[in-house]
Image (cartoon, rainbow, N blue to C red; front, side, top):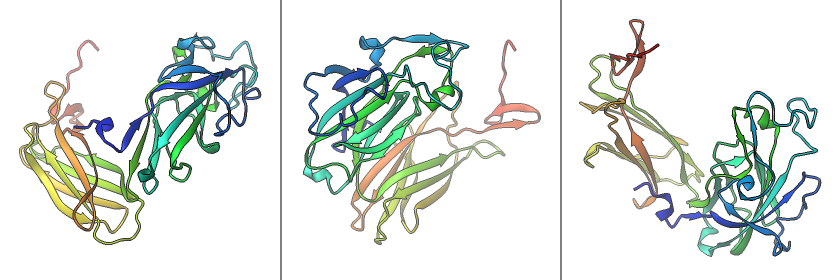
Length: 313
């Protein structure tokens, strides 16, 4: 059903976090994420959400100027230091003993503009891509029972030079935060390519590359896939390919597929399974798949062999 948080392997961390805003990095306490640090007199802030929309700092709108022009004279790739507020977030999370033998990942769907992550006082990593997902493997930092998550968010960073667009400038943990766990061997990534054949544009040319992480060298682990139409009928499958390398590849020709286009956006459903030596499912993932070919043909831009007409240009 593609409902991530219906799974026992996911835990949403949205909600109330402890929060305090500092003028710049020189004022923020370096040990705020330590388990012993007292945050009982800190404010409470909602995550996800910009701190400017919750009464802190000031929202700023810019178009052709950089946000710090007129207040601080810096050159790329330097970030402002005099006025660069730092928001410190703290969240305590209970970790069950059953997770200690799994791979545990914390995911931030979007933080503006840069942040350091701490688990139980230890610095885990850094990210400065505001509108992209950032993931950290925290397996070696967690313990059974109460764990402290600390996030140190900077309003401006070196990446702010590249993210300067015609928009409001806000700050904070602005999208979902969650934990998820996987087995030691897991589906790290997968790539689907699904054009139509370029002769008649009737058959689908399906290819799938599945990347397996955490390989331990054991035998018998297999990757399976199934492709289903909108009526839940299977149109392609593989009964199981052994994992001998980190990438397992599949190819299939699917006759008479229903193509995807803007007028009729027909989608199939891909399900990928990783199974152990006994045939038990270790992990399952998947996504919608549309069959489409985009190309320049006889000097014209075509979708599925049909020229696209652009009106009013």
